[in-house]
Length: 246
Image: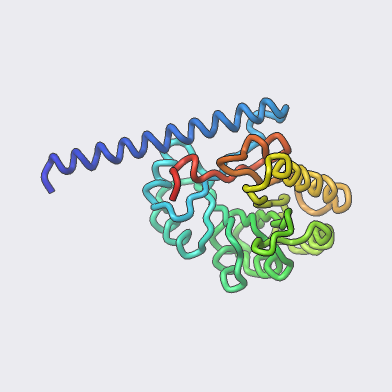
């Protein structure tokens, strides 16, 4: 490879890195502005980079821009990236895709968070398979907030019973709730979906006060994060606004 080609590739890498860093800065400012407008404390809303289907180099560029929390949907893809990026300190890996029973061991062993626990069987397997050398796995219960047939998630009316059962699982820390509302809803209905999830978390705090911190609402994405933050989101999951469309 001649020097001009190497310089050209280096310039491309710098532009890509600058673009991702600029986008992270832009999204972070959106989060900060929305947090302030909603009257929440500074730093109370966290950015989770949705890195599924993105090469490890894109994650490395986001890391260089200060990002540490990454959300993955596919177990094997995530494990491959963890291996490739193992030299980077303090990366926090979040699993945000549907959880299959045959993948729970890998999730329990490799991730710090699982946002998409939708039934007790999955919670029990994650608890049983979490290595004792690791801290409890942070989990959110995924709620099918719009009762869509195509979406994973538990029903609102099942949350208290699930929380009570998870309280008995020492290797899990129940942090709160996650939902993926239908983004094609009218704005008023989308806001209502976010509010419904926030109200469900408040109800859980009242009815199941011993069941973990219950301090987390994982909701909102690139196009609606301001609305989600206004309704109480503490994690917003953003991919497209950082990397562009897949």
